Image (cartoon, helix red, strand yellow):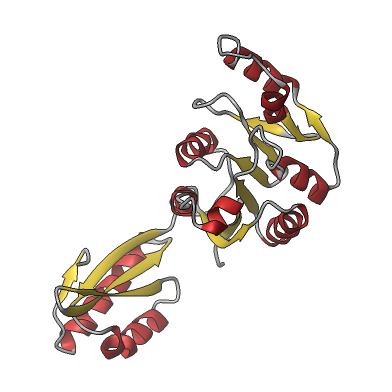
Length: 252
């Protein structure tokens, strides 16, 4: 019986990402975290701070995957519209979460201005939502159904992911090993294809590079089975050696 593969979609929200003013770091850290949870990041969309674009992306990715994550647009300013967009996508109202309000009241109690109307916006959630703890800046993340709304600031996102660790249903974690080779990937394409075909529970990714005037590639073998992974790596190394190619276990 084939093991079920759990997948997640990710919507990155923000004009600052699309303009290049801010460089996204969340895709990599969320993808890595998901792999440890036994969930594969299947699709990523980057959308502007436009209501209908966010709604469209949220509906497409939440319906096509086991989980959906969003980053960005849950702050105190007028263009932070992720909560409103997700509520619209789910067909629910936006409400102030009492626990979120209490968290923010405590966090801002000794700060200039206290809990202003702008700061209170960070307590707004789609009706029926629960909170994702945020140890960094007080304002919590939000989870409703299979949708998880998180901050856009990478270190805050990391803290929210940590709070979610072990709470999501997933499959076996995806394992990987790398084999490096100082050769153009086109010269070993047939070997890669044959080895992958012989190991149906493994995938081989080829990542070419150019260093010090030389062309090479790293071949990343992935599988949820440690035994299948080892068998595939061994076959790949045997195939490269038989064809006369030098290779480096662990990658170059």
